[in-house]
Length: 288
Image 1: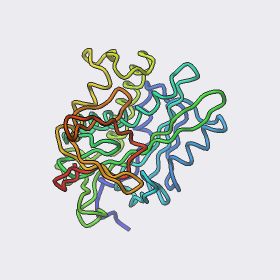
Image 2 (image 1 turned 180 degrees about the vertical axis):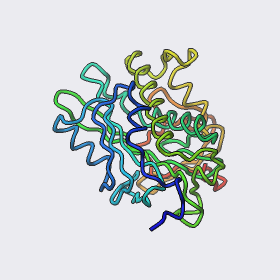
Image 3 (image 1 turned 45 degrees about the horizontal axis):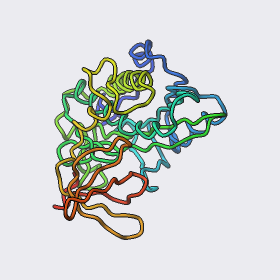
Image 4 (image 1 turned 90 degrees about the vertical axis):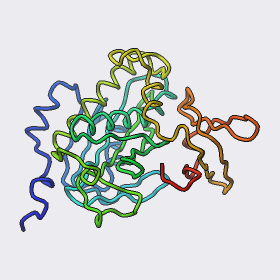
């Protein structure tokens, strides 16, 4: 049957992908037609030692993926980019610094999307990317024990060429709907991995210290680079905790541990960690 979307939904070109990523120093690269969950399957390969640092597990059609808090993530074939990357920097790398890879992945996608498609993306704390005020990408990071140290699997799902009727909720969008100039998924995927690998190398060079200037990034730290893209900052937000309680405050900065710093009441401040929240929404009801 002819693809009604033409080449926009052509499968990833493995030869072009290999050419574009040849110098990135990737580990195992698996390009699968279908997958239950790229995070789960890559984590299994990492735990057995079959997948090493910067291994990539990509699928054209994810059937049983999960987003944050166990939400279902299923993608129509050829409409998105759904993949996981393994970060296994070794025993000398601080385990607590692995939590920054959610933000590092978000920064890599924002650069890739702008470079290839011309669409500017903002980061919504703790794990989404927005085009305007609508979600275009979700990120899920999972810790994985690997021998005498820990690794992290960073899964991302980007809406590339869906039309409005194909999106699950009104708060979602795709790069196509956001005005993308180029929807070549192979080139976009390769650019994301290029940006991710470069940021990873710089972050490891500063031993995972988010406040240290990253080599090759204009003297700015990962904390500063992410903060510049963080659309949550400067807004009054409502934080919902798993126990049902809420906190409304102004998002004033990103903490050194990746927490969102809220100011409320008479100038009181609270550091909110991603693992401690259920939802973060702007107090005016907007998604960002």
